Image 1 (cartoon, rainbow, N blue to C red):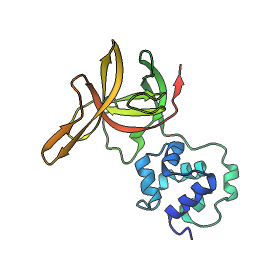
Image 2: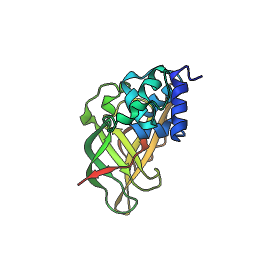
Image 3: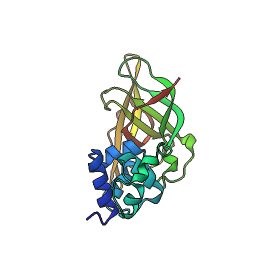
Image 4: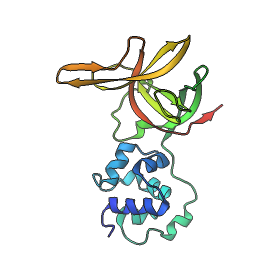
Length: 206
């Protein structure tokens, strides 16, 4: 029982009441795709994330890593501070359901710390935040957008004017063989390709 890391992670999540890998991703700041690979057993032991996962689920990091001992080892009692959150301070464009867009400085997930993120210039990225549900996105959605337009399929963020006001929208490009299809309408102005889209509670710094 609990012989693999995935087994122990599943138990740790159950003990803490965390229902999905996606929820644990939001709790820890670890990239969601990486978290699903952990939960499915495709990654055997994420040594660099052990402390963060253990803190988030309330179990012993030694047990989570090795399977030796008990999930609730006393070592946890001496751990008073959470491990450093993988976030960074940057400019974010907030898109409310009504009114003008505005910029804030806020903490966002630091995708550049992820081993899965291929090194790219941070200046190529922009962040958009949807605090409440609009036509194209649900509330609490953070969008990480790469402005450098390179060929290939994907979901793209765009804007359009309606009654003199900017609206955030999106379109998709896909390929079948060499044939490209796009859901982009003529009134859409492309912002960039969406690299990450996830739920996030924005911590606004005034």
